[in-house]
Length: 204
Length: 139
Image (tube, each protein chain N blue to C red):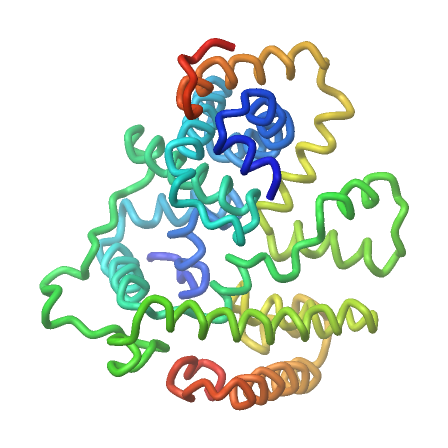
């Protein structure tokens, strides 16, 4: 990414260009959550400083906009905590210790917990690629109903019944779309030689 | 009685990725419900232990987000009716915060006085450029 390379070299023009390109969307992102315009602008300002200070660790394979939104989200969270609006959530459930705690629900099994971060990254990347392929396929074929179903089921976490109500479909139609989506993901996971326990959600 | 929140929603809350109104409702519920705080702490700990859901991957990688250029075309009415319906669904029903921000920004560009934006941008530059490699902070 040329712009980032120039900024890493200290190019002020490139930095101004990045600010021009992204400040508006960052301000809109933050402003929805703050009641104070000045506070929202301060969060955006901290976001830009946060980008510069974290540049040595920035992986340029990651889209810059997503990276900026994630920094803005952290800065916004800090502000809301300082204002007392966002309650602090303990890192562990009460009564649990780090050594004795095991995750609940869909999770990577104990063997995968011991795997390297790089292995996790590869597993996630394989599943992301499989999902992206299906989503692009839906778009190209104009299968908007199927895409909407998958988005409500997986991104919003709605049940089949709720999804059917939102989209005015039968529950059977939603179930069929869900089955097909998951079946294709499972096929990709098998083709990628990924262990089944990596994403047990696929087999629910 | 505490409102029921889905696990997927609570995951998105931790990432500051829900629509503003929904974020505020969860914050309000958290203030009055130690059980909800505990549930959120459990989800937080699971994530730290490596757990990840399809929804989180989908959201983090923004797999179904239209591009900013497509949002520009959306505002100009230059895309198909079906795609327009889907994009409206994406911001209004799914409530994608990132696309909401892009759309609001593009709309704002049509109405905001250019000098207001440029003053704001200059201030961002002046307060951050000192962090550029090899610079003293001069604009």
